Length: 224
Ligand SMILES: [Fe+2]
Image (tube, rainbow, N blue to C red; front, side, top):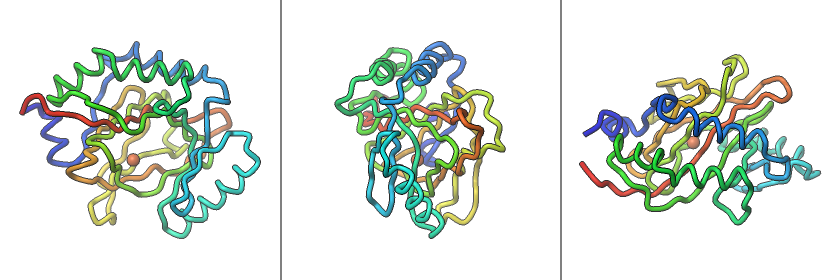
């Protein structure tokens, strides 16, 4: 069994670099996200279990973001960040590009070679962007079989936050810190072994954001 698959089974998550294989394809996704018009983006906010995808010019956004931040301060699960939904009805250029990347031989052969798996479906697919004040508190990714997160962020200053912290099962210790780095992938086992993690609040200059491709996928093992 591949060591990446072994690590995923053992730890519930695995971190690895895709730049060698996918630099060009990921650069195209990065450019598609950068070129996406504002209308493609929403602010997805989870406030007390209520999830809303708000247009960036929605007048209630500031208030809803502040309410979600209050949940963070209260120690509860909450998030607020920007995303381009790539799994829904909307067919933006960026979402089409993400879909074709996930269908590409480049991506499917990586999953086959390194994880002995083929994709049989997807539940949630989006490009996210964390800008100033955006955050995602401690949670375990659930649904489907794996969650694939591929960083599309270059030259990130760690002082800007937006770091992913992997926690112990009892959520009292940090096991690993992942700083945004272009082409770095994290895969979480969303079925077998839940891994608590969070993304720290971003404090970055206007116009700087931390972006990733996120896909929760159903997979089938094709080899052991
Ligand atoms: Fe997550």
